[in-house]
Every structure is written in C-alpha cells, then in structure tokens.
Length: 89
Image (cartoon, rainbow, N blue to C red; front, side, top):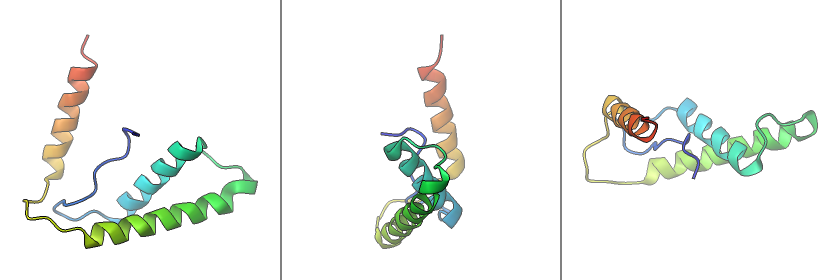
C-alpha cells in the first residue's frame, strides 16, 4: 500500500475535492509507475485521474458511520509520532 495516500473518510471538516484529486493522482502514479506522464500519455493519465477522483468522491459521499468524525490535527500528530518511532535511531 502506498503510504502517501491518506484516509479521507469521516473528517470534520469534510474532505475537499483537492484532497480527493491528490489521492487519486498518488494512486495512479503508484500503480502506473509514472510520476509525470509523457505528452503521448498525458490525456489518458488526466482522464484516469478524473475517473478515479470521481469514483472516490462518490464512495466517500455514500459511506456511513456512527463514530465521531476524525480530527485532522489529531491524525497528523499520530502520523508524526508513528514516523518518529519508525525512523528513530
């Protein structure tokens, strides 16, 4: 799993379109192995980003949960602590 793709479901305030698009871009970069597509592949790559972002937005809009929304600051602090523990020398 790509560690750069963040959880987007159930945040307060809700996830933005830009965050969904960034996750879609990271996902497609990972599975294609292409960081910046060539001119020949640019249109296909952009269309794929649009499709994945759209599907992700639809999914996030239909998911339901009874739990309390995640807090962005708390999640960032947890990630920072995990990173510090993982890379501690």
